[in-house]
Length: 525
Figure (tube, rainbow, N blue to C red):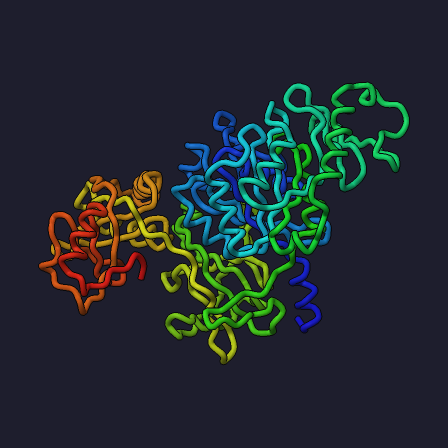
């Protein structure tokens, strides 16, 4: 496509991640959005275990069994002239690293908050990452079909705890069993609460914000209370400011119920009106790569094995940052300088996939990978080398010894470890002296998922012996003397062969530093 067509295609993209604390309803709202995009006929909920109607974005077997998301899912659909690309992220803190990397691949974020619980610890952590990157944030306060906290308190908490201004786009009329609907401030109407089967029902408002004509709701005390609250919000609250939204300084706030699919369409329509199109991406050298630049460039932010258990595939997820992707094109892998032909590519429609022939900046594509890619890799066309900023990597805190339960299944054991480690959820180390395998992770759930997937996807049961919490510190190989190792600081090497010590605690690390004052230790490479 020519430059004008490329720009038009890029401008239609809206790429966002959904973030929240576990169980705030993030995966459920994703399902409802897919429903509007015509991708799924009926939305599954995360907890629909008996019916087998599982959430489309939770494709992994362990996610269906436990009712949680432990991996970022990518889904897309066309709606109202836009191409919407959603990345549903794990809410569980043990999988924060996956979420943090995903946030590097989006242009905005949707923050889902439980109306009864307000802002929870994981939401706060993920919000800080968005704030650090200046990502525009849209807030959906969920579960209005249940009793929750006062909406004024929830808006105040946004501003006090997260330090971001909140602008109420709509306002709940009651909640729980007394939930009547939402007063849509932005569209000057009332959306009455109803079952999905009944369809949408709106009441028009006059210039004073009052219901036109006669309606029973006018006589209810809750309606009068809402009018007073809205006056208060309009008078003392933040003013709507598109520039502040774009800078991540103000968040439009929507109330609704994802489970009953109420308020979700109102949210989606407004989101598409104000969400940013693909932005420029910064390189390590500090240059900006514009999305409509003619040369193709993108980066790998995620690798996932066995999304299709029948084919034992491995997919590298690439965020396209500039130019146009064409199937069969040749690119350069920046890390190795090697030329690669991208002939096997896919895009995701919930749990379905289709071969992608072309894609542009803002799109997420999956490349079938035989082991060429690593998380953080840049691929590009053209003579000028491109290397995008480094993706975040966490230093593990929990460690286990791992071995195959059945020594006759070493081949599948090694293959499973190699592929799952490349996904980045767990880190692999080897003892310097014995070569034994050690896994490191941020949280215990990562080990449980690893063990489950080894058994289910690689037919390899593993034995894991906990080593407890350790402090990982890398050491320059030129300063290393293997005699420095002791029972309090185990010497191991990472996947690239770099040496590091696993210290028992801060005391043992201080003892080491006192004994070897000239040795430099680092928390990350």
